[in-house]
Image (cartoon, rainbow, N blue to C red):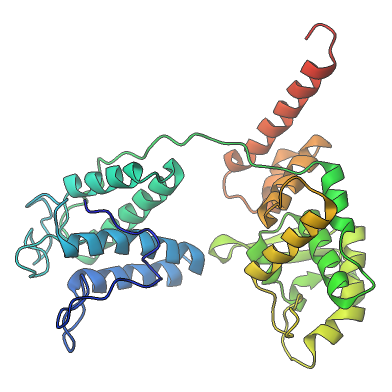
Length: 358
């Protein structure tokens, strides 16, 4: 398997020699390679039928294009004849008998995963790449583009479960107190950090929040906020309670700062940037990093660290694991259980530190 730049997908690729199309691309005027058409259909199905987020679809596209372009370039890692594709066979897509993404066999895919490991990708990233491959070939079999699934006997690398980073309650308080609420942007930032920590939202859910998603139990509209409706992965809807402190800051922001920041823009986004448009994930990440430095934190937390802190602090104060699962929007309670390990680790640390016979 030739080495490829993991940042190539979505960025700039080296130009092809004069008169030659890029790897896997047909000459000008010819239809796209068959494997590219199959890949496009699969990605469209992920978005339309399974409702996966555009970030997940983009990651799958990156993983599959990386392999497809490598095979189209040399075909060196692929074996021969195991595809059994309907009308395709091991000859691939007509590129001089070269295998491609549709006709690759299990040996080619195993070699690809080994190459990812050799390049230093984490077990989690390799597992995601294998998940993308499995989904693509299952789709290809169902569509009649292949007669077999070459990923059937491939096994994922062992995933070492690492405990997520969390902030202490003191660090959270320092971070929340860092914005200056006397200024419109400071008031917005205080409201965003308060709401993120109070609800455990994903950052995409926070910046994508719209006014109708804020609800009051008494039907008071934006006069009160008791809970919000979040749309998580796969557009799954869940109801998340909002604490009084966070609700008060959000309402104050909506009354005092949003009209100034929105600058006449008519849209439903709750949190807006200096241009009056909806806040972006990257924009909020920069804001949070600046306040972390101002608060004197040891390192700048990502927005997801506040989500981890929300869950961990709830469990430390006796919250029910299933309730935390529902608020986080986890499909499986085993995903939420990692926060109980953090709690146990902290208890052990306290025991070792203070017990006279520890």
